[in-house]
Image (cartoon, rainbow, N blue to C red; front, side, top):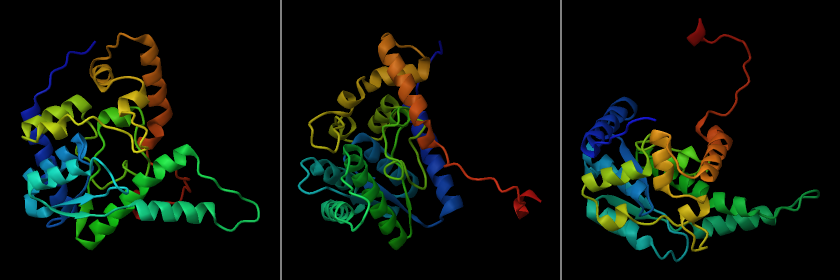
Length: 260
């Protein structure tokens, strides 16, 4: 088994430098566009971008769906950081697109959204919103996924799994929380329990069937006490690895200037 230790300040400083380097190479003078959910990941990403670029170059995008009870946390974060922000309610777009697809004219198809379709559409609409804001305000869109969720596929491809740069993709939930505390974020945001967007009342850990603490320990050390949960984690990791890979491309065999 691997030995494991984590220095939050050291890692925070490394990520801040990495963000600065990314923007120097991929958008000098551009703004960081961060979708603000009010949870630990978007809060930490926004705070890291503020430290790396200054608050004047970080734009928060709040995207509630209808009357969203926890939108207060997103507002708390942008006020705490003092960043410019815009609030866009995505419910009308989601409802309209759902109705247009399900009621679309077709002689052969009768489309009714599956539960998974209903789950994945909102994050994809939100990502389209982030890119619309980003392209309008000279921005680069931040991906706010963490290693733990990516490991088991707990993200939506071309939804929250998209973005131009990803500060947390190699950091587990426990590590992200530690960095959040190092950044001085309000404890309520760092420790906010993630709940799915289906209004089921279930937490992310309820849906996964194991805790992030258990998952993080397994990822970093290979240690896990529950063999049934180990098998579940391994299965989810294998099934969802495609989400982290470029989609397959046909190889024509015709040379380009890069290969000459």
